[in-house]
Image 1 (cartoon, rainbow, N blue to C red):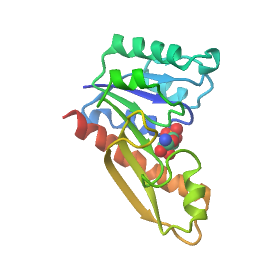
Image 2 (cartoon, rainbow, N blue to C red):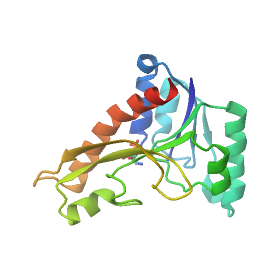
Image 3 (tube, rainbow, N blue to C red):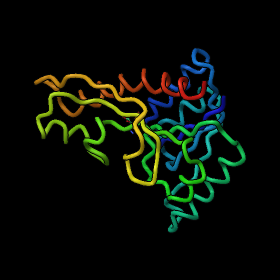
Image 4 (cartoon, rainbow, N blue to C red):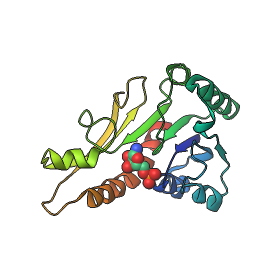
Length: 184
Ligand code: GRF
């Protein structure tokens, strides 16, 4: 089973997905990033996985940019497209072309806090729980059907930074597990 992982930043979820390939029987056949400076590129090098880099800043037109992504995906024909901290909105034609095959992980208990700054928003609202959600990608931002959601209690001592760490620790476990469950 072949998967492609999209990322934009630190790529710790990418690393965890790569680490679990043998255990869960999927293969990361390639990666994609919009950010030539993404720290996660180091993991592609370490694991010998090809990463296609197309800087979105070189494009004014989102559909033209996403057309290149579509060609990249059509050449690979992956079973699953895994967004792991990919910080670009995908256009409807691209999403429609791969309907049901694109998943995302979002650092909140959706439908709470779609979009950015989820940890700060949970703290500001004095929430008792926080967590992460894996969902199918549709053209409505962070609103596709939920596949899996896991939560933990927010402690009085928690800060934005501690919540980021707690969410990521959770994600590093549940994302590879969910990928494995979807491709079997
Ligand atoms: C994760 O918390 C994920 O939920 C969100 O972006 C973050 C990516 O972190 N979509 P990393 O790049 O995998 O370290």
